[in-house]
Length: 508
Image 1: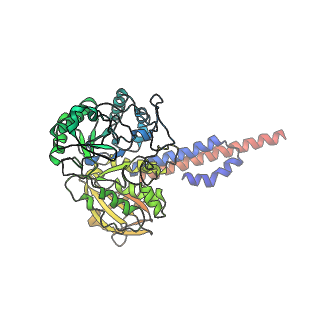
Image 2: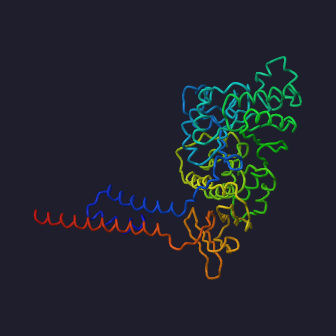
Image 3: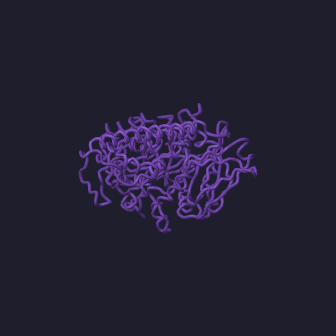
C-alpha cells in the first residue's frame, strides 16, 4: 500500500506544494497501520509452556572471540595492532557490553566468547594461567558486569576452558614441582599428562573455581582429545555440582556426558548442502540420529568460512547464508553461528577467518536472522516440537514442527528453480490454511483438495498452520481505514489548493 501511495500521489503532492515532512507522515501512517495488522495475522501467540528454557535444545549460540568483536575501552589497548591479524586487535569486555543490544536483537540466547584466561595470543590458544583474566580483555569487574548485563536480558555467557595445549610460559609449567605434569611439547605448545591424577584434580579445581566466581551459563571444554572419558565425566559432574543449571559442551567428538553432541562432520554436511543449489541433501538428517541434541552449524572458528566455500562455487554468499540460516534455526538441533556470519565474513584459515567485526556493513542478513530467530524464540514448537520430514530431495526440503498447541510447515527451496509441493488435509488437518510469515503468502486448499505450496528458487518460507476463517477482517478494516485517511487528506489538500489559487488570483 505504501508503494501504491508513492506511485499515485507523490507527484501530485509536489504540484500542490505539500511538504516532504507531510508526505513522509502519510506514508508512515499507512505503513504503521498495515504493519500492525500483519502482526495480528502472522505473529504466533506465546503459549504457557514457553517458560524459561531448561534444555540446551531450546537455545541458540552466538560464537565469538572477545578480541575480534568490539573495542569498547582504550585503557587496555597495549601492544595492539589492527593491521596485523595475528596480534591483539583491542576487543574487550566493555565492547561486549556495548554491543549487548546488537546481539540480543538477533535473538541468540547464549553468547560463547571463547577462552578469556591470560594468554599470549588473541584467540586464547596460548594460555599462561587458568585463574587470571586476560588484561587485553579487561578487568574481572568488567567481565562480571558483562555476565550480569547479559543475564538481565535473558542471555547467558559461555566461556571456553581448554584442557590442553597451553603456552610454555604457563604458570604450571614454570612451577618446577609440577614438572611431571608435562607430557610433551609440540608446535610450540605444552601438553599436559591428562592421565596424571594431580593434573586432573588441578584442572577440575580451576574450572569449578571459575564457575563459583562468575555466574556464567555455560562452559565449553576444548582440547579434550587426550582426555579419557572417565576424567571428562568427572569434570562435567564437578561443574554441574558447582552450578546445577550450567551447560557443559565440547567442540570435539566425545562419549562423555556433555549436554549436547558435536561432530565436525555436521558442519561439513550443512556447508556442502547449502554452498550451492541442487546439492545432494540425503545426509541432512544424519546429525539428528542420536539421543542428545546436537550442535548444528555451517562452519566454526577453527574452519574456513561458509562465505569462502560459497564464493568458490561462484554463488552469492548472502543468498546462500539466508538459505543456511533459515534452515538451521528451524531444524531440531542447537544452532551455533559464528560471529560475522551475519555480515558474510570471509576467510580460508585463521587468523583471516577471525577478522575484526565490521559494524558498518549492510544489515539485510542481520534483519533476516532477527526475523527467523524471533519466530523460534516465540514458539516452543519451533524449538522442540515433533519433527517430520515430508520432502528431502536435492535441495528441496519440506518438514513440519508440531506440538499439541500448533503446527508449522517449513519449506527450504535450495534449488535452481521454482518448486511446488502439494500438502494434504491428512498432513495439515481439516479446515486449515497456511500463513507464510517471511513472505506473507497464504495458501488455502484448492479444488483438487490439496494445499499447493509454491516457492521461488533459493528461498525459505515458514508457514504457520491455522484455521481457515476466511477473510482477515482486522486487515480489511485497517486497509479501509488507510483509504479513508488518504481520501480525507486529499479532500483537505484540494480545498487548500483552491484557497491558495483564489488568493493568487486576488493578488494578481
